[in-house]
Length: 241
Image: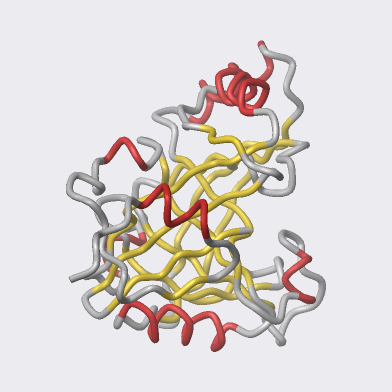
């Protein structure tokens, strides 16, 4: 029987989009401290939504469900629950709309990969105040919405940093009190084991996270990147920027 790999060693040795159904993690590898406490969702981008859905389904055994469209933003998505108040969003262009407002790079992405993440602060107005006090440029809080396939609309507010370092830094989201969090009604049975920020200068990047009020462990890497690992009933998926 092969010796289990630690998750950190596995992610250091691999890159890109990875399917690893035969890899077993060492005992104790599923501690919550390997995922930022306020993480709301991680985002996989692709120019073809079906391709992103198939990637997740083939490697975890759970098929993300269509979430709906983002009116006026040029995109649509599919969703997968990753546990309590955490989920995966696969985002792709919506051919029925025009210009893509957020994540325009997905138009050229033929292979799915991580493009960003979101955190849910306790009070988005307090987050805006903190960013102003720390002289960090941002936009918002802005209203956002998504129309579900059944016609209902989810609503939220977001803050986006003026410089998110190409998705390495998160955006902030506060869900409307009358909206069901996507982790509640998206397909379940998967979990986010590991999410990490990696940077060329971990100390400097860690200071930035402190200034924006987000706790995140930053590991050293040859370039700034995000990496995540999802486990499902039939396999595992490692994915990165």
